[in-house]
Amino acid sequence: MSSTDHEAALSADADRVFDPETYVHGVPFEALARLRRERPVVWVDEKPLHGWSGGPGFWLVLRHADVETVMNQPQRFSSQLGGTQIRDPATPEALRYVQQMMLNMDPPQHTRLRRLLARAFTSKALAQLDSRIREHARMLVERVVGAADHGRCDFAKDIGADLPLLALADILGMPAEDRMLLFDWSNRVIGYQDPDYASSSAFDLASGSAMARVALRLRPLPDADGRLPDPRTREGLPDLYAYAHLLAEHKQRTPGDDLMSLLLAARDDDGTKLSLEEFENLFWLFAVAGNETLRNGIPGACIGLIEHPELQARLRAEPALLPKAIDELLRWWTPVMTFRRTATGDCVLGGAAIRAGDKVVVSFLSANHDEAVFADPARPDPLRTPNPHLVFGYGPHFCLGAQLARMQMRALFAEVLARMGCIEADGAPAFLRSNFQRGVKRLPVKWRRV
Image 1: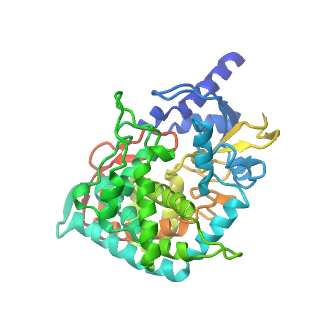
Image 2: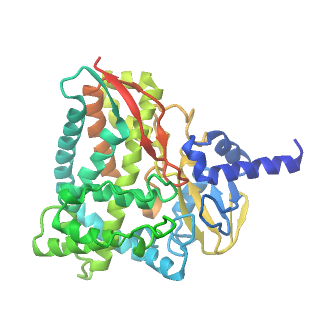
Image 3: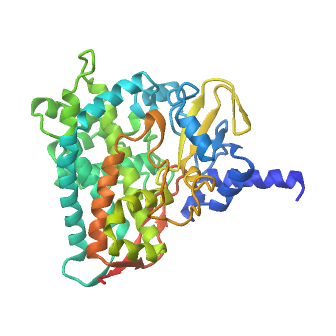
C-alpha cells in the first residue's frame, strides 16, 4: 500500500469512528486498534452528518496513557473553555449555559461543587441507598421471573432501564411515579443523534405528581419540520429546570433524608450554601448522567454474559467474584465512549502537535481496550488484576457516582444470576445511534433456571 493509500485508510478509520451511525451496527474495534497502533492521537474532520452541521475538527486520543494525561491535567486540557461534548455549543449564550454545569467546570469552581457533593454522599446515606437498591433489584427481577422456570424479556427495557430510575428517584427525593421523566430527559439529551430517542415521551402525565404536571406544560413541541430545540441548552429542556426548581422549593420547606435535601443544606468552608441555579444544574447532572451511563452499562454487561457463557456459569458457581466481574464487564462494554476537552496552549501529545484552542477528545472505549494495558482486552476476565479501567473517568472529574453505579449493578446481577439462571440471546440487540454513549435500546433474551 502506498503512503497516500495508507493515509487515506487511516482517515477513513477516523471518519468511521466519528460517525454516530457506525455504532448502530457495533463498535469498530478493528479501526480503533489500527489507529491506536499507528496514529494514537489522530485528527478527525467533523463532517456534517445526519442533519447536524460540521465543525472545525478535533484530536481523538486513543491510548490509555494519553487519555489519563488529558483527564488529569485540567490546566492544559480544559473542561470549561468549550464544554465536554464534541460538537461546539451553537452560540456564545449556549456556551455560557453549559459552563455553569459542574461537568464543564475547571478548578477551583469544580472543586467547590465537588466538595459540597461529597459532603452529601455520607456513609450513612450510601448505606441507606444500598438497602433500597437491593429491594428494587429484587422487585424488578421478580416482576419478570415470578414463579416461572423459563421465559423471555427485553433485558434493556424490562430490567435494565428501571433500576437506575428508581435509585435516582430515591437520591433526588422525587416521587417514584415521576421517574419516567428522568427516562425522557436522558433520552433527549444523550440520544439526540438517534430519532428514536430525540423526542422521547414515555412519561404518563396522568400518573405523575403535581410538580410534574406544572413542569410538563413547558415541554417544547416539535417545529414545522419536526425538530426540537437542542436538548443540551436550557431552552431545550425547560420542563427539567422547572421541575428542579419546584423540587428544590419543596425540599427547602420539607427536607428529607435524601441526598438532594442533604445537598441543599450543605455549606462550603466559608458557610456558603448551594444556590438555586447551582442546584438546578446539579439536578440536570444527576437526572441525565446519573441515569444514562448505568442504563447502558446494565444491558452491556448482560451482552458480555451472553457472549461469554463460561463467565455466566462461573459467576453462578462463585458469586463472590461478582464485584470484580462487574468492574470488568463495565471495562469491556464502556458505556461512555468519548469526552471532550479544549487545549489551553500549544503542546505535543502522542506525537501530535496540538494548538491552543484545539478540541481534544478522549476515547474511553479505545483506552479500555488498549492492549498495552489490558491483556486480551476483548475477553472479560473476572480475575483481571489490576484493572485500571477508565469507565468512571480519571483525575479531578472522576465520577462521584461510581460507588452507586457499582452498588446497583452488583445488586441487580446477583438477583439475575440467582433467579434467571442461564441467559441467552433471543434475537439481535438494537444499539443507539451515538458516538458518545454506547447505548442499548433493545436486548431480547430468553432465560431458564439451572
